[in-house]
Image (cartoon, rainbow, N blue to C red):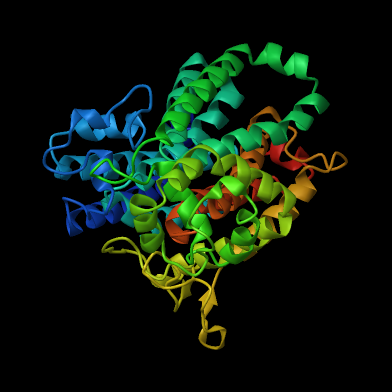
Length: 473
């Protein structure tokens, strides 16, 4: 058999680009995640790890199909079913590794800049800012992993229309939306933003071509809405007394961890039902929580049942507030002062610096006010701002109807996935920043991953003329 025949046979068996690159990238990713796992196989516990069914004796009461638990049931049920924290951490590591390998493989399919895309995705996946979540007893690892899988199978379903990929997309989407409330809120926002686009594409024809996807999406959205609503009513404290989950989110908005809580308090004091708290913009969340538990129980009830509606009206009337908080999240969230546990990296530091920066101030839940930062000594490095600028420019170019970019069937799936991926990331960062202005790195990490992957995919659509690429096939 001649060499050209061997190559042709190899392309038939593996039509996904550079086989050597894929194997090397997968091996590096596997080694990186195994190093992170063996750093501490039992994982690093956090304050609310117990709510995700971590620990030696998780309770079955943490699982509720109606959402009547502090955390939604898909991740909790998985952790509960696993025998120990060692196995739970192993599961997070394996699922994360599989998700990123699939993303690398997908990047080697029908993309012009295959090698560049695969290299960037590999570098992103092995950064400590991503890989370390696999050792943390929270939901971020699964949120990132299932989010990446949603991107992969959205592209495959759009390209091939297979029921198998529709099932996998629906399954991963359901789990993804139920890992973090911000994922669900972002998805709903993206649906509303997409409505004008659907009208431009003829809604009736779109629905006819995607009946199954539409029905499944509606079911997922409605069921997740039920879980989200019931979750917000649950008590946050382990003793089952006092502050609810919804009230805790409100406390993050009105206390000193929010750099702009003073202007929120000014408007909130005008609400007669707000109750006895008064202006708490200079108080810590711990202080306000104690007041809610001991003296202001009626205010806690109002924060639980009414604050979200009031706050939504407030942010709609004050867009500058949203812009300022989003700007803080882009800078501070992208530049973690510290991570949530130990980490080990097999890659040189510059690979992380492509995506993540650094800073010398904490600005998270540590007892310090976010409003009293010495700007003269502030040092923040935030590559995400450049990535967002690139995203905006790419979207303007690609959404231009005169620019015939990515017109082949295969590349249309890349273009659409890249657009939705980038928009989801941007909305996620903004929504996380506004809804819980605290722990900026953790709250925005999913959005950051989507922005990075969105830009990487959109760059493969830069070439307008496709005749040369089609002739080379």
